[in-house]
Image 1: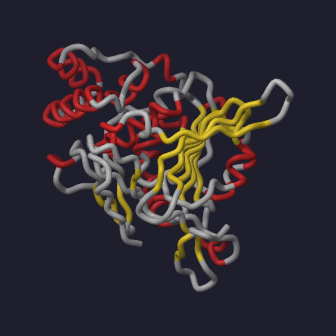
Image 2: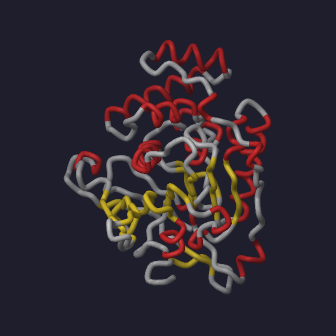
Length: 314
């Protein structure tokens, strides 16, 4: 599957990691990855917060505490400052999560200098890891709170869910591509056994994300990172009342990145509110007043075992 390069926003972000399979052919391929017991989860609030007001203090702390690579920490800090300035990271909790998450463990690049570049990077299987800015922006928009149950449609590299694991101990992630799911599962398993115990918070499996994860529903927050022309009804049903979903919706190459809130009116009726997260801030679209973004198509498998777009299809 080819990445659809996004030129409509300042920071190109394409995550074709959420190709979604159909029941039938794909069912024979998909295997459940590791599922952590509730008792095995790590309270993210117990993880010490690194210094966030000084590059020198932050880099010194992370090298002494966790042994992170100093050169990459310099780049992480530089990207962090750019994201704060761009308002892709706003609250302390999102800033903290970004500074703690080691993107280099998930980027799969042979060029370490590009790990914290603003653009997406290929991770194999014909898919990518999104640029840091779009990851930060989507994370900020759902406003994860301690104890929230969060569903990610598209595990991909594992980077997005690693950030979420620093804000809640209940992260659930689905990946369509069996081979990618297995590789990322091995990375998570290795990291959780080492100095990243918090990654035990990410419950993951390979499955058709269009249908969500009914076993663990309802979810307080849902992140979807593939373009589609409608909001999948199963995901709306699995979103808790008062919950928030972020999803790119619209025609190919020109989606609106929607923030969807499920609320109950005074009369008791459930209503869905939609808001383009870039509409109120044109600078997020490169300063040109554009609000459209370009994500790879939300797909499924056909009977021949090939992925096809879900635009116009359920």
